[in-house]
Image (cartoon, rainbow, N blue to C red; front, side):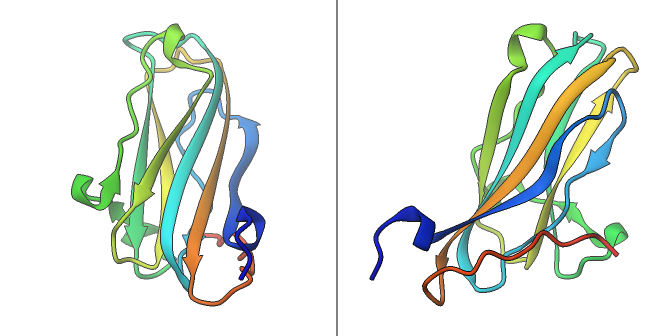
Length: 146
């Protein structure tokens, strides 16, 4: 049995670093099949123009399929931790993560901007999967919504 993380954890890029300005977007989807534990992480760079009227909210969503319109917000009780509202310049340049305890196969992140004042926002997302049912871990690819 390998005790190193690389043999026991799968790290999946869900959204490559990109400037999304004030445009809402979804990450790609993390498929949890074959794993008992999952984590979603958002990496936020400098948000130019963030303030109390121009904010970023990150929400975890879940679904049994990959159909975009079928995803729902993950209940707080199915998350370890919480994403916090970014509404001040002192709150950017951060990584926020939550553990997923729900029962749905597919999970993703929604990045929701309020206002139109955020003119630049370098953002990325990734998922971690662990407690694989089969070792060593085979890293799955991110899934696109249908």
